[in-house]
Structure formats: C-alpha cells, structure tokens
Amino acid sequence: MPLIYRIGPGQTAALILVAVACFVPALYFHPSSAVRVVLIVVALGALALAAVTRWMFVVVDDEGVAVRYLGREQWLPWTEITEIEVVAGVRGSDTIRFSRADGTWVDAPPSLLQPSRPTGKPAARRRLEEIRRQIESRRVES
Image (cartoon, rainbow, N blue to C red; front, top):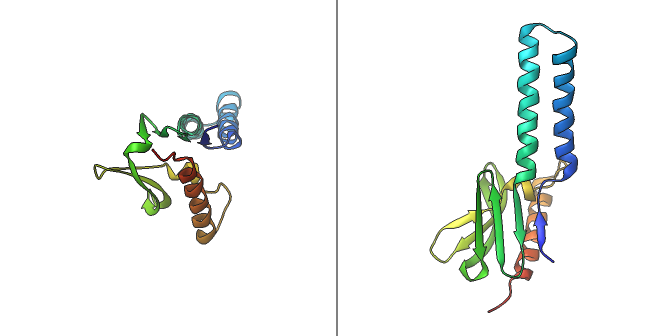
C-alpha cells in the first residue's frame, strides 16, 4: 500500500466555505462596487487555492516516488534516488528533498508535509524526520 501525502480535505472544505461566505454577500446583499470586487477576488482566490490543495501530492510506493506540484508531476524511480534528506529554506520552510544520481533534486511541496496546526520548529522537524524514515522504509534494495 503506497504512502500518500496531500493536504487534508478539511482544509480544502474550509477554503470552499470562505469562497461561499464571500460570494453570498457579493451576489445577494448588493454592497458597493469596491466591496463587491474585494469579496469576489477573495472568493476566487479561495477557490483557486482549494483546487491547488487537491492537485498537489507526494506518493511513495515500492517502485519510487511521485511528486506533483501545480502544473507538473515528476516520477522518481528508486534507482534514480541517491539520497532522501530533510532540508531547510524551501519556500520558507523545511521539507524533504529527493536527490538524484545526476546531481539534480526534487523537493516535496512543504505544505504537504508540514503540520497543519501551529507547531514549534523542532517538533515540525521531528515530524519531517519521521516521514523521511517512513519513505526510506519503502525503498526496496535492488
């Protein structure tokens, strides 16, 4: 059974609720034009973020790792992966990096692996190390 990391459906649902909460007054309560524009922009932004949260993922199985960002997906067979490490400073956060034999690397989207609740940096780092160990355990020695 593969390991699948993605943003939880609760966060996606919350973004959809924000969009609805912005669309309703914009459409039914006839606010001023400036307020209506702000409400619609916030609603569309929330819907776009909701779509992005369902699109991104990291999947780990016996054959390798698939990482999908917005607009691109990368497949990394285990034979190409030389190192799996926790790194800092990727989009302002810690995440897991998959290094390839050719010197390139793929970073997992930090938002998929970071805790969703406010957490101290040491606890978040420990969580990432635990995820890294789980991913390493899926590697089949060939």
